[in-house]
Image 1: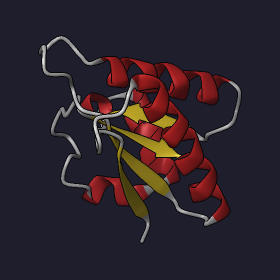
Image 2: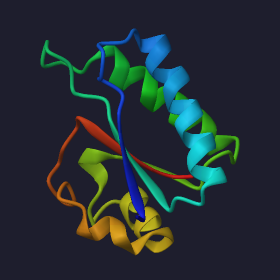
Image 3: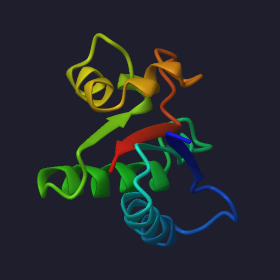
Length: 113
């Protein structure tokens, strides 16, 4: 399997617990040579973006800047028109086969570990 799906919403965790799980899943994926992760964090019930989504994006941006992951793409940017989408697709072309490709889904993010 090239893309592993991780649902951070399972069990209704706090944002801190979700970020802890995210970090563990990234380490596991790197050790197992998984090509990409599809992170389900949800959009938030308020319609404004949930705390888990915001914290996950913050953590992934930090990891990207530190070189701890190869690429991070918010779901709404996974398309051939965004720079981050093109960069992730160059690293993992299978992302183009994901059902959320070019669907503008803000409830998911993609990581190339």
